[in-house]
Length: 455
View 1 (cartoon, rainbow, N blue to C red):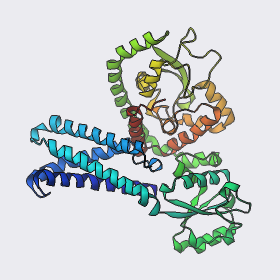
View 2 (tube, rainbow, N blue to C red):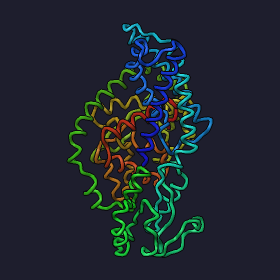
View 3 (cartoon, rainbow, N blue to C red):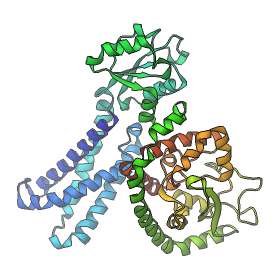
View 4 (cartoon, rainbow, N blue to C red):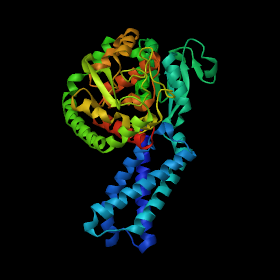
């Protein structure tokens, strides 16, 4: 359902883009799509429209959970339009100059009309289609902390396409959920009213429920396991599912060998690109760090890598140097926080733009890190977290990364409990890692960098 809605948005955006081009041609030349001048533009503009879809994705406009009519929403569309126009102008006037196509007016009109149509289409979608169409009625079998979390999340996100209509539970619902219909047992719930039923562990062996679901087999009632549904919607692995059996069943590392090996080349290419940017920016960054605070330019710290092997991570120093070795800690290891007073003015800028991470190209070239993976943790914290959650060490199954799935969900994980939540995201990545998920992470990281949303 979520992917289908995203594809609906993509399809609508493409219609708007091509519609804008057709209208621009008609306004400028009274031309139709069959005219030669118009036909010559179709091929290059089609490629640029694909670039527009990528830019829209980077801007976060395909994240259904964040589609809300607001000033910030329309600002994103406006900025996306400006950025696309610049990319298109560069393409036509620098890389495509041999073709002779320099559609100044057409490009300007296409930008204004197409993205105006996209803004209108998105407004209509958010107001009506996102909640009125493609909605599945859902019943939860079992009342657990995770099912309550899911119910609350889905009620706040109607755009995801789920309408919670009831819960099968022998116990009373919490006061805040009193509006939901409670069915005391499996025999009392109306299977014909639901499109989806999510079964918690306590009902997995309920013979009455199993029989009723079987009787409704031909009604196309969708049956979901709570753990799998939780993971699909929240994009993290729920802790109640974790067991040795879960890891053996879900982490099929032998099937990832080809992917992991191909990633090494991409990691090296990415590191080389980072090294070029590092070389260009180093003189200015180094001067700014030195004049803004006392201490070394670079910050080195021991982190835990693949298979639990320690390595030395290197990055630009962004905090005050409070000890002789350049460390910002006076009383032992501590987690950083969003408003950490130890961060310098220049350090804050370096973090927002992720420039402070550039020196880690050295770690990637040394094969200690990858471009994408769980962020490397300090040995002291890893030890504490392993005591609290024995399965924590599984995140060291792959190389740590410069950016990762967990970092894109929340900026800071400043406590042990929050870092255990980060583990849920890390396990989701380890289980589902692949080319498409990596591409999504890269594009969302670009959005973080361009939007200066670093931590």
